[in-house]
Image (tube, rainbow, N blue to C red; front, side, top):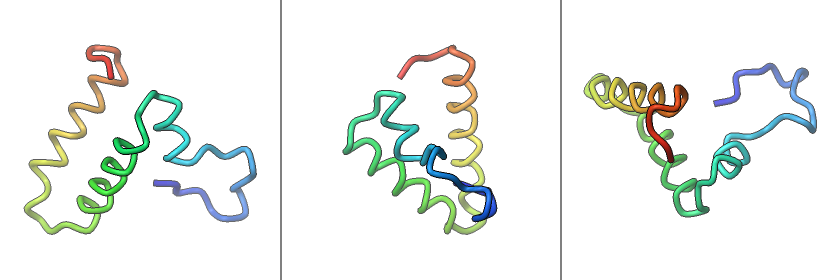
Length: 68
């Protein structure tokens, strides 16, 4: 999610979609990931265990422990 104020957003800002594409995700995978992101953002309190798992997976990817 882009949390920059609108006045700070420039044409050079990379969108989530562009960042996922640069990481090698297919168009279908990007759509699924963005849908899941939206679903988890609007979910209730029952989403916390799932969010923790996703954050753990993200940490593994960022630190190079698993590859995409």
